[in-house]
Structures are given as structure tokens and as C-alpha cells.
Amino acid sequence: MRSSSEESNLRQGNRTKAVLPVRVKGTDSSGAVFEELAHTLDVNPAGIRLGSVRRMLNVMDEVTVLYRGRKLQYRVVWVKQMKGTSEFQVGLQAIAQDGEAWGLGSTEQKVHSTLDRAVSHASGVA
Image (cartoon, rainbow, N blue to C red):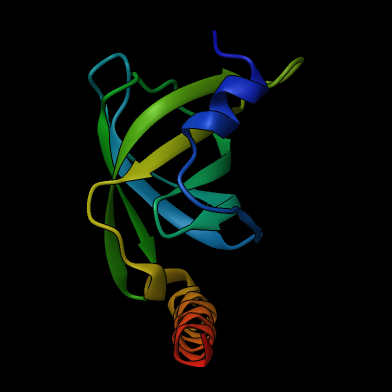
């Protein structure tokens, strides 16, 4: 099992805490097809952390997350059973990044364009 510092070293980008209702579809560790409600805990364009997952999933499995009419494809990168419950937290890596799916793209674009302007301005002054 990875330590939290190792997980943060592997993480791409900052996480945004967001509890959003989602529907998760896939195949669980026993091979049964499922579709269930869950919720996000953190999101970023590269991945999400889900809570309230009631199925054991295998690392490297692919799942579909449905949110606001969007179908987003993810790969399971870690699974953690919550103590004293039958629920899991699941770390998912985006197969195709879509920052707009969670409303993150515009914020990141603003930050990058502001940084680009600052760098261009600083270069022109020197």
C-alpha cells in the first residue's frame, strides 16, 4: 500500500475538494456489472477520489462516471475500504482529461494565461 506522501508525489495537479453526486458504472472485482450512486471527494482534470462506493474494484479496471449528462472514463489506481463499513474510497485516473467536466478548466486557463502574460511582460522589460 502506498503512503499518502507517495500518492501526492504521483498526483497530477492540485485537488479541489468537491462533494458532487455521480453515478458509477463498471465491473466489480467479482466480475459483476454494476451501476450505483456515489459522490466525489476531490476532483482535478487528471482524476477524482470517490466516496461511498459499495463495490470492491480492482486496480487498473476501467469505470464510467456519469455527471450532469457527461460520461467520463477513468482507470482505478487505488482502492481503500473504510474501517467499520462496507464502503470504499476509490482513486480514479482520467483516461482522457476534461477539466470542464467538473468546472475546473476555466479557472486553470485563467491562471495559466495570467502567468503567461506575466512571463511575457517580464521578458519584454528585461
